[in-house]
Length: 158
Image (cartoon, rainbow, N blue to C red; front, top):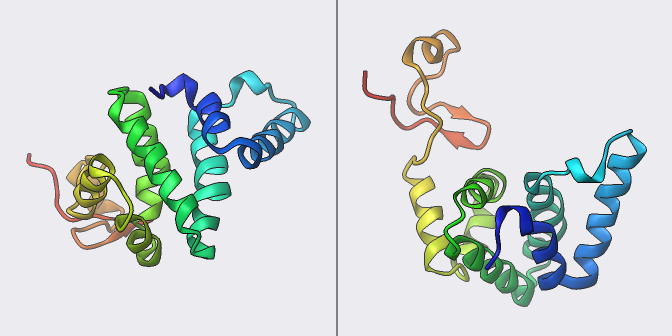
């Protein structure tokens, strides 16, 4: 089982040397900018190591075994029931994958049932950040307007 605070170890365990090099790069950057390795969150590991360093390059190379391994990793992570990890994956992985149709197609073909449900739920507009209608309108955000890679498909009930 993969937990929120076990993401770093799980990446090392599942992806070995490629993950170790990417993790080392992230940790060196944090140390060189005056930070502490202990302060690196699972969000950073999921976005910089997993997504940017392993999954997206695999998609761009059409490396099906690595894409499959990534999908299996996510399926395992989503199976554990760790709500913090689920949120981390939703924000740092699912949201960004859905921002590119080519990436979405590549993973939908190999994703397990839990991640497939998450991908399809996001595509239907859930879970969107709840936008207070007042500020949303002031910012010019209306249904059908993009926010980053998300598309606002509804307004919350008042």
